[in-house]
Image 1 (tube, rainbow, N blue to C red):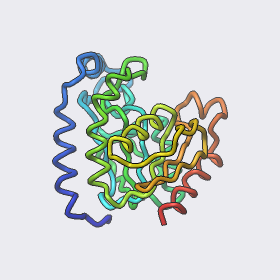
Image 2: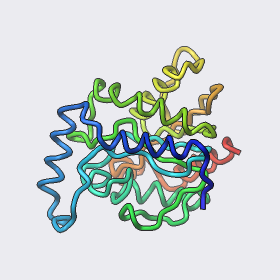
Image 3: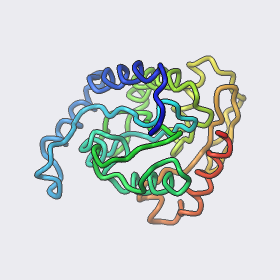
Image 4: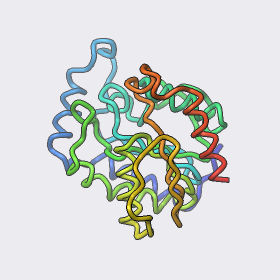
Length: 232
């Protein structure tokens, strides 16, 4: 079992605060509409329909940052990347490098445990068409600033996609971390060392990328292995 630091209690309090957020009217309306109408294949399930907090090891040295919960994934299960195809890719890869105890996550009570890793999202509510606005992103960023401050052992931030990369950059800037200028262009395998953590770019494990071969398992595994190396 991952150890729990003194920050664990503050992290739990932040998690509870996040789940009560109603700051973005468009996102509130959408996440709740999806939770009411449901997808036919999940008609018998009770959807979460609220903001989805991060989860994992409070002593994590690697932070994985995604875009936002999927409408019928995290918005249904209450745990980011849980219950969707992107999560199958993410947790499968994390399992292969020893960051997760199992290769799949179906629901929030399925026994998944992360060791040395934490998973979060730039925006905490499922957005229409999976496209949050920049205003919605910026309203959510203070939660990530506080989350990163509590995850004080993090040495690597894996940005899953360009949106997460920009969000992570803004979080580091808001945390008064000195950053290189100009900002390096996002790319798969990009490494940006900072005094707080190395920012590591990775294509998002969305079906758009995995079905087309833009992201392959060897490519994903290489980023996972590099993240572990940088964190050690």
